Image (cartoon, rainbow, N blue to C red; front, side):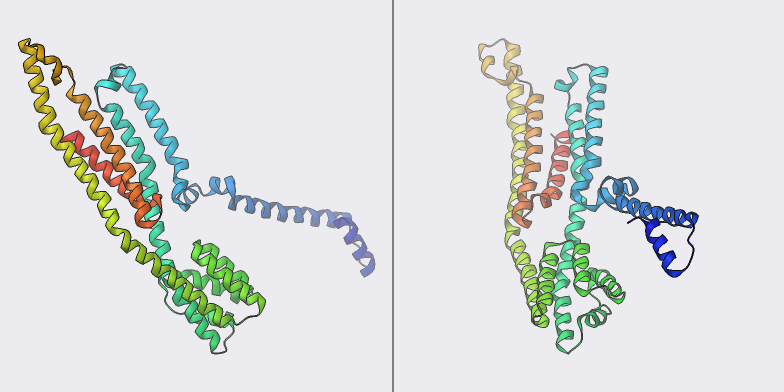
Length: 344
């Protein structure tokens, strides 16, 4: 049944006369409302959200920065290589380190934003999850005293829970507008966006729906959250020594390369040149025919690769996520580049 038929019937039953112009105006207003709702929905999800808030979408998750940094890095590489070839010829890619420097800068453009955002995101998650056990425990205490859960949330929202406080107060505001407690809890977990929060809220919502002892469930959720945070902290502290070993091993690797390049290879190259200039047949077995620059460049590539992948391994072992090791990778490849460009 269309809106015209519905309004016509209502008009006839109520004795009122509804003109076609009024019906058309109401339909037009209705269409405008639906169009605005649909436009707002598209602007909050997918590509529409990116067009409206590009910076927010890019910084929402660490890996989202790749949408911006990878094209920039690729453009830098392409333009840089074209410039080098046109300015210095194709041989510039092999007899200079300018091509290596371009690749190094492009890699930094890609990984530095990811490493920085992941570092701050990890701190945010840890700060939120540290206060979750206290929040659930206080809710359980309020509920045990006979206070309904919405009122308990309102009382708890007046407390201080660090980074979790704004999320609790927003949930209290939703409940004050007659939003169901379970729905408000789910939106609370979605805003926090951590697996621990979603798991705890899932447990609480199912217990509330089944009519069980919510106080006991809240205490169980608090204990589960506390155990999770405690075990994660213990794991990080226990694996810290392996992270340190990986970083120290990298610096030992750099020290060995620096000593090898600065003493042995340099001495062999000078001796080889001296033998070659004397015309001795033994020069074929010396480094006179080898380019010391090639060895240094090869060692610099090895150091950069070693630093990058050692950082990922350190993150995987220390925090259980390879992405968390990008901060170590960034630090180590910068040190490697500085060492080989200015000291070796």
